[in-house]
Length: 285
Image (cartoon, rainbow, N blue to C red; front, side, top):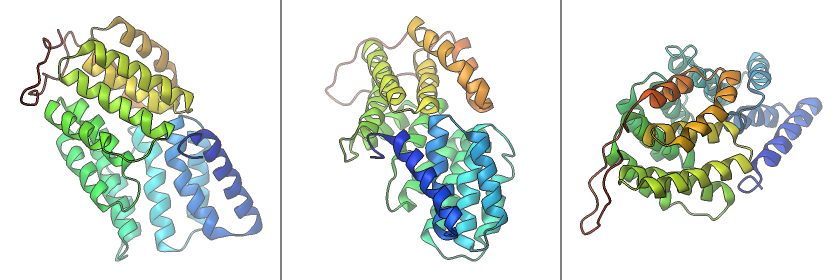
């Protein structure tokens, strides 16, 4: 259900969490409150409501791994807004303490990556996203997608190609994975100097993410399209459509990057070298 109907799955998760809270099942409640954050972030809804849930849960949580999870996931909302960027890593490290837990280690790594990304430290962020993926024993899609977005923002066509290739190898045929793969294909087409194919793939990825309820996720892909294809009128129209959501969410780092991309007269990325034996059209103008 989470792969094909993530919005419904997340709503069920939140409802189950509330039921767990009502019957006094604190362990399940705290886990659900923390892990529901990533989906609400991508959906671009209930950020303030959920931040209040996280704060309430922290006030009543004493188990170290629960607190690490709440602080790590909860930081995502403030990081997306560019708030308290200098404090989030120290916050999660303070909760981790001497805890010897692979899950905690992974969460510290992706908080570091997320903070570096929002702070504009893109080389460090890219390295940290990939390190966090290595530490994550289960679903690495979010980390590798973070690496790809960082590569685009950093203007590194070689990183874009490598990360897009990683995403192309993901298993699964659900709607969420298909949307992510189309996003990766769009970025790869752009750096390879194929603007028409890139535009079509971006259009498809954005439509797929929107259908899945990932409004903020779709807006982030629009920003990436604006970076890679700034001269495209269609991309600029997408930017006009997503700007109100970014403003409502107060997603300052993303708004700033969108404005910078739209102000650019040329693509940020030079085409990465084509694989041997592959012909490529002229670079983006």
